[in-house]
Amino acid sequence: GPGSLLSFNIEHGFLEAIVRGFRSGFLREFEYRQLCQCDTLEDFKLCLGDTDFSACLQNVEGKLTTEVVVDRIWDKFSEEFDYIRSQAVGSLATFLHFIQYEYMISNVSFLIVSLIKNGNPEELLAKCDPLGRFPQMRSILTFENSEDGLVELYRTVLVDTPIAPYFEAYFTNERAVDRPFDEMARVFSEREIALITNAIKKLWLEDFYSFCTSLGGTTAEVMCELLEFEADRRAISIMVNSFDTPLNDPFRRDSERRDLFCSFGSLYPEGIEKFSQVGDMTQLGLVLQSYGVLNKLWLKAEAEQVDIEDVLNEHEVLKNRLAFENQGHYGVFWSFVKLKEQEKRNFFWISECISQQMKDPQTINRWLKIF
Amino acid sequence: MAQNRYPVFPSRMSLQQFKIRTKGARKGHSLLKRKSDALKAKVHACLKEIYDVKNRMNEIMSTANFSHTQATHAAGDFNAQIVSKVENASIKVACRRENVVGVPILQFDKVDVGSSQESMLGIARGGAQIRKCKVAYDNALELLIKLASLQTSFRELDEAMRVTNRRVNALDNVVIPKLENTMHYIASELDEREREDLYRLKKVVAKKKREQAIADAIRKAEEKRDELAAKERGENAPYTGHYIEP
Picture 1 (cartoon, each protein chain N blue to C red):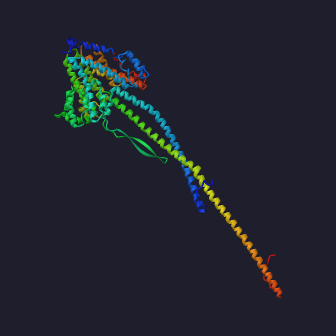
Picture 2: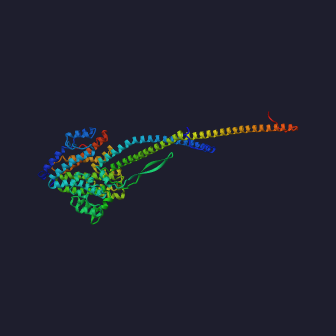
Picture 3: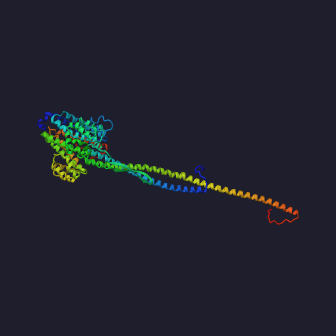
């Protein structure tokens, strides 16, 4: 298949080399330590002088804020990603688009909700993730906020985007009607945007998973493992975050909460089945007992008194780092993006701690080493 | 001194009126004085509380800020999503008037309008942290409203205290002296009039006496003349019984 080592270098060798080059652009451990020593965000400029990010914070007008730092760093990455994507051909191009869809889904559902609430278009566009920008995005905001307007929006704009099938599937499942988008306005104003977005992302993740499986070879091997963990991580996060919310209501566990879980991953299907009986942390821990790695992570979180989400996140970083150990597969591109996300979070964390004078080592050192 | 009194016709009745007014003013003064003392105590208590709350504010605000950092770290930037979703305030501030030592003070209360819509935000990542952040900001908001309440009461109490003190001082230094002066004036005026009356009486008595003396003298002279005339006619003067002073 196209995902195997055999044919990989013919088309994608160059891009893999580029990504492996970008790999050395990640901040090193000692560079993070230097950042943590800064007194103000202005000192970041000096610290980043010897790194890949040296150009990022130059020419910043006005005061440096966490927002500026994070935006600049993310913009830099989004340029790198755009470059790779524009060079990619064949199934790798599709693969990279798949990665982008996640961000596109967030942007589109955010814009639609804002459209219903009559937000200011320029401000809204600025808040969209650059990774999920697409040409037609701007025109979403020109639509009228009405039933007809949204149907029109679907017919003329969304239908041309690659994420349209996910939206359609979601609304078809949701309403069980022939013309799913007729009720889009109602669904978007009635339901939580977080639930809609995550249900659509679930459809995307399942689709992505089957695409990676179809690629075969090392790619399928690496990617399936990563995506399976992603599905497990999401499932556990959803469980943890749904406690104390109406979603934990026994009547909604089987419908709305269940809708958010992917139909793959090590928890699927037995674990997911048992989740409908789970209403708190203890019960969740009991279900996870039968899953080796997940149970280990769960116990680790309990022993160290940290959030399970943090532990899962740390494990995800480890897995993504390991993806670079193998050669000749698409997984590095996915891992590159995910690790860059972690890098962004590291930057966010350190610069917030510095702006708020939270220099306590236990607090500030929550960043995760990447390479 | 003459100007510092009420324009009044001095009479017993007006004196009585002013006595009543002075008594009223004295009573008012002592009441206001007590009010002023009470207000002073309240203002001090209020000031102390403001100081405490401000001190706590510092800590609670940075906790709230940092919990937002933690939530963003866990869930990614979620501000825009909330802003685009929110329609109504979930917490409002109600104000009511409360009576503190006779001063109506504006008090603010936090009212949970309860936008009932439990947020599902961050369901796949960091939702629990976002809820913690919400609680932290709820606490901060509550304290902030309390602070606003306290600062408004402080201003109003301070103003009331000033007015009361001004009244106390006005009573003490202006009204009561003026009333006393007026009473003094009336009293002295009445005394004066009494003395005048006495003097006039004396004068009248003296004048009456003089007239009497003259009349007596004339009558005496006439009697003498009559006597002499009778003697000349050879008659013995009859005893008239009049005693005539020499």
